[in-house]
Amino acid sequence: MRGRSVAITLFLSLASAGTTGAETSPGHTIGLVVTSWYTALRETPDGKDECPDGLAVGTQEIYIQSLPPAERDRLNAATHHGKIDIDDPMVPVSELRRKALERGPHGQDVCWNPESVDDPPMRTVKGKMSYGLNLDGTTDGHATPGTCGHQKFTGVDGQPGIDNQWYRLMGCTYGWRSSGYMEVNPNGDLRDGGHALLIEIAGVRDLADSPDVTVTISRAADLLPKDSAGKIVPFNSFRTMGNYRYEAHGRIENGVLTTDPIDARLPFYGNLTHAEYYLRAMRLRLAIAADGNGAKGLVAGYYDFDSLWNYISKLGYSAVAGQFDCPAIYRAAQALADGFPDPKTGQCTALSSAFNIEAIPAFVIHTDTRKTALK
Image (cartoon, one colour):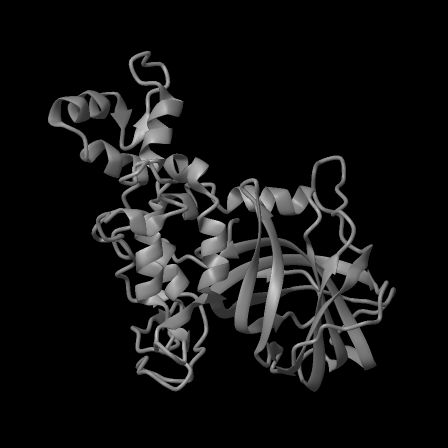
């Protein structure tokens, strides 16, 4: 289950051996290690509800359409919806991909220089429903001192006023949908690499109602252990990495954990790229199961544009397989940004976003007591 069309389940445990049940002793802590992180995309089977104009056009297709008719027809005949027939000796795949990227007026790479070309506008989500949270507190998306005016979604559960411009931006892009791999690859690296996140919920008195809890996010210094079938093993101990630590106040009401907003820079590695998620006003919303062994949840916040673009600009080598176009994403992201306006220009600098995550029970070993808390 990818968790794009349904909320993700997180398996929780009390971070103390032998403790179970809905009631816990004062000050108890729930420990987790995150094992997957996916953009919360709502997808219909044929995509027509959210993407009535079709999927976004990739940079290779844009390049081919810019060629003289004879050359364009020859390359189109050797491709299938933008995918090269690698058995055709007349189409050198690596050369075509290079030309598709280095098509600026002076040979610039268009992912590194997205303003060097004027590509067609990006096809973005037109549907009315999305996963996410109401981040700005408005029902109609009107501009506020901290946001720019934007169109709201209705939540998949019927809740009004959902903010998720990151989904609006990327929801019609092949590589980010369940049939693509632009997020499957990073999640494979998460399972095999060393950038897993640890989550602790401290001060839990009752799994249904605890009005004052502290949620701590740390980076794991250890790899995720697996059994012989490749399944990540729960209830393992993980050391925290250095002083990487964020804290947020939260509360559990009717079995749902909600945290107050914080700014956080979360580690990320995938698609051969080191980057980060810089999420401003980030919050967690987790529905904790009555027995403490499961929950459904979201991580939501404003995805900083510079952080976003630092990642996208490095992905040129996969623009063909992912069927996306860097210049189109660059312009659309700026147009859709709805959070944290620049005080000088008024241009918003971040996009509302939502992510589904998976986690399993874990024991957290603190190796450094220093904090970089952003409360």
